Length: 445
Ligand code: ADP
Ligand code: MG
Image 1 (cartoon, rainbow, N blue to C red):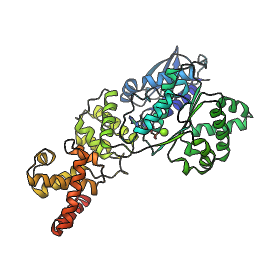
Image 2: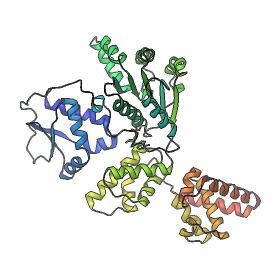
Image 3: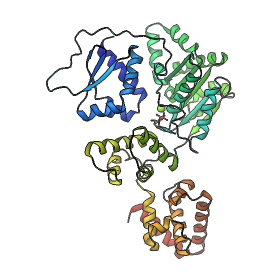
Image 4: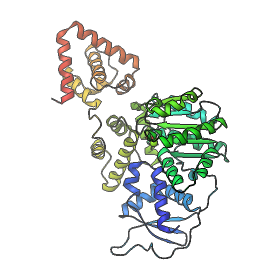
């Protein structure tokens, strides 16, 4: 393998291991500059890049290099001087590709994707519990385990956590983690090169098969066939299989049909979009990993704006950190808003603070009191109206709403919405005021 190939392999591996946004921002613009005496020099666009990669991705890059070359190579980031060409075509010391070491990176597992770093909330508790159970009892419970959920909700994280945990328990484990897409490419290659037997053997000798994103199989009959037989063989041998998908098995018709008898011994679990508290916890954890001092206020601000995709949530934070380090601007809601700007055009821009401000204005009560504990009649009513509007206009969960009022219990919120519904039914004037308030919040008019 020449050094250019090494680097492109490393990038391929990193593409699987870091999130897409981070990959596009930080890794895609890199090139191999030179490889001398066990040091890989990577050309980057500017010094900030060099710094960022050094602090945030060096370990990932070194481990990917090790996975690709089998050697412990050093990495250096440099900004090439204008006009000076990278020296990649010169003869390089041969890099031996070594296989057979049983490390997580060799299995394309990201070391960060563990159960410890997975924040658990109502939305993902069942999937998390099932995954942990499977990792501790390979082939004995829930076989196959089928995890489905929307984009960026943690499916890859969970399936890889199973791999990492199982490997930690059984270092000699024969496991394979692969996105269905990669499997498909391998199968095509095997057909072209007439190595289908090796392909079969590779997959049928496994203790644990982690097949990510099986919705990719929709319409790919030949691959479904292959997987079906492989899966049968694995299950008969007592091996564990885990699938993830963006939809339930019933929406992958042929797979469903074929798995159906087998699914009797298995479990299908879904992951829902995370509730507010979980989103905040994820942001705070991520900030901690990056050694970044993130206040709960800013975390709450971002978590309120990015609701349906954890990848985007993380990307927002990465962007905020970058903007802060690049410009030295303090981390305020304004900076957070700027960081979010292009990332969340698909998200609903309404945020709960708008409800709070509108209600506080309407009832002429201070925001702090509205969010506080005061039980005076006027404030209590205003608070119930605000809770009601968060539910009806923003569609927030009872739990999330409680959070905005100092961590009130969901039954309090439920009681508030029922009370306002009753009042509306009894008093048309009150009903029309509420109607006006909703419109005001919805349109900002
Ligand atoms: P999917 O495969 O469902 O599209 P990923 O597993 O790639 O989503 O998750 C996207 C990002 O969000 C990853 O960086 C992952 O670590 C992070 N993530 C998702 N769910 C959680 C969670 N519950 N706790 C911590 N991080 C999470
Ligand atoms: Mg995924």
